[in-house]
View 1 (spheres, rainbow, N blue to C red):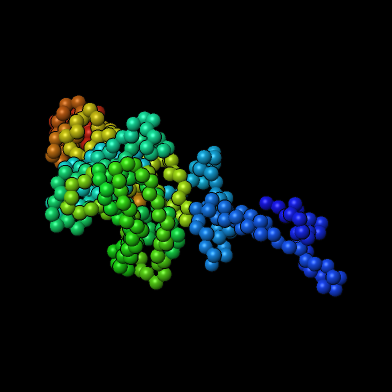
View 2: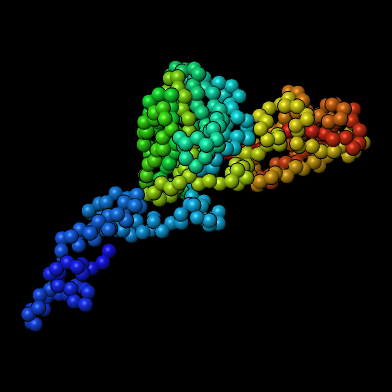
Length: 400
């Protein structure tokens, strides 16, 4: 862009526009239509490049465009802190601490970490972790996993078929512009309603729900995005376990297969590329809400077998006497004091086991639980000897 130096009759002086001088009798400069159009187009190009829609009545769009376009390129090598854009955890469905599928067609809850899958109306649903083939080109960025909701029983009278994540703190994005992006496909053309709900927690104000959009899914992997305004929370009252919920509502009472991956919720009016965090970082973020003693890949249940147990302690007192003051520290500090559940590695009873002699131990009584550790009051081995290694499994649940 430059002044219209090569346009005849524009009347520039020293290369710039001048006003008419009535006293001196000199005319002012002219603004040629071609130059005025080019200036306007230059500004429009910047606005559109930032993902904004030109608006004649809005006078701050160039400033907004500059702000968006000046954000760091996600491909540049900046420290990881620059990239904490995605407010969701495990949006690529890489982490499944509870196992790679739900336990039964009638059992929902948390399956992939941080995402709940709930349904009613006697529906039968299989929630599974699926893997992308290496080098596939349908979804860019070489993602590894996606979540599959496969409804094997339609059910009747359902009111909820939902995949959702609770984001800690109702203050999240309050009163701000947000952008949601995700990839999805279905076995047939189906609507998928997406909404956010400001949950003010127990003892707080009533929840505020805002529908983001109703997206029409098809059989091919497709990128969907929407920009929306999150309601302000002035005048509301916050209670316990407040959060912002992002939910995907599937059609009710139908047989269906829906796949989701690369879900990103970020501040601002522009959809940016999916934030690729390392699996190590993603696991640590998940463990703030849920952690298990089970070896990686094992489902959370009793009777997984003693050879894979990774939570052990040694019998120090004399044989057949109680073990006191056992404390197990968490790998990651929990959001709140978690709910701890113990499991037996070798059968379905509430016992731990002697690794070498396979004898039962009784009384896995919790003495104390904090956001950092578990303490057991006593574990009493049966027919054990000092120095033998004892095993138990546990989970610590601090989900919102």
